[in-house]
Length: 178
Image (cartoon, rainbow, N blue to C red):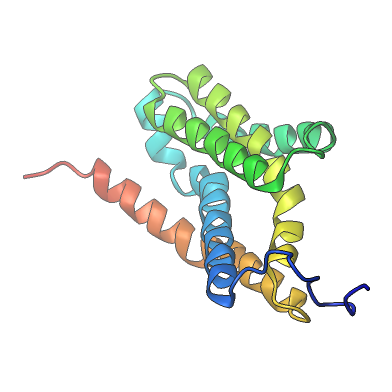
């Protein structure tokens, strides 16, 4: 006997609504962090340039390097990882992204920062190729659109809040203390 569409069969694990909402919150927060990190060099052009001793135009290329990396690696890496368990893949993508972000912060020269941004870009492409499907799988029955919109709200929040806050924090950290 099969279960009606939209219901779980007997014995199949059913995640509680609270657990599903928590998962969606994690995805939304991760989306916020990924997009904020992607765009932050735009708000910190002069600070990064001054710190590394490079022209602002070269710092601006960090966004271009990132975008090209995403464009060149998203499809092949997504295909390569398509059979990996979703939770494991999400955790690995977040770990690679976190490593690239930490390396970006620790960069002592421009080439190191470019390499760190490249690493973030490889994770970014895979992240975007799995996040909507992952959100849909966490949705309560009949609420797939709502679940994906919650996750993608992290993208909007990053542009409206993450960028300005990140830029302000960067500027504040650069201010000499009296």
